[in-house]
Length: 363
Image (cartoon, rainbow, N blue to C red):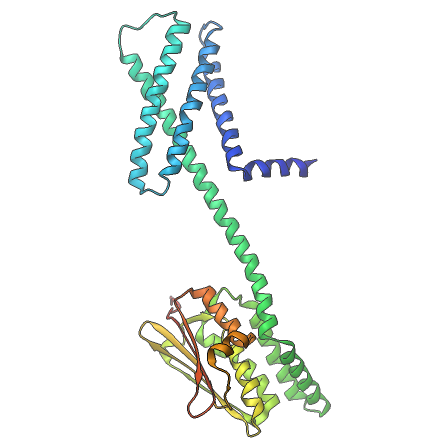
């Protein structure tokens, strides 16, 4: 029963037009009720109830044009909004006062008129404050609804971020990597290299925890990203032993630059799979980061056999490592980034990423 009532209220709140009319009718009914209660303090004839109802009905009708006017000027500057609200409220109040005075003096006073015009002006000012209050409530409720919409969007973005995180883990920590790592640990245990197996398991645990703790929509310092990469590379070094050489060349001034979490790991994995693993004598991976004007330039270079496929085609069809990284950069930076894949000199591949330089705030 209660769930049904909550569902009905949710339908009303979600339908903005229905919600407006519910508040509009309730508000003007309340206005009439307050006037009626106030009339009980004086000896008023029963016909005064009709005057009250006609006044409330006139107020309801006169606020409808205000609604459509405020919709049209919604995106105007604050000063323009204030000016339009003041003028529109006063004109509506003046029209309302004319209608109210006509019904009062014709219906209740049988055509009698006051000697002074001060009464008309005072009535207009009183109704101006009511119209101004109506306008304030309209803007207040409208802004509140916009705030609720933003909160709803934030909740949806958070939900999508968690889904993106799961996809990131599925792409970046693919089954081959986990299978090879666990198989290497099992081999180490069989040959009684328990200390090394325990060390490898600890690094795998730390790397997995880092992946779970850092959502893909958040950015982390570059030095923290490199620390996570070293955990991953230390695991791979157990598999490749001395065949894998890693060089880190990071300028001191960009170590605290903000970057997407684990955005380099798929590129490193790609280099290991297509370069290091195919060379019997092993190979080298160089990770470099420097500041170029107001941007951060990050590169991943290997000295593998390279790839005969054109770079653009390789990005489009090469899947997981390259296209996933490019898509993440596009989602985070829009058009304000570059992602290039070129041949390395004398051989191998080179991936360059250029993004805006954002430094972490220090306290």
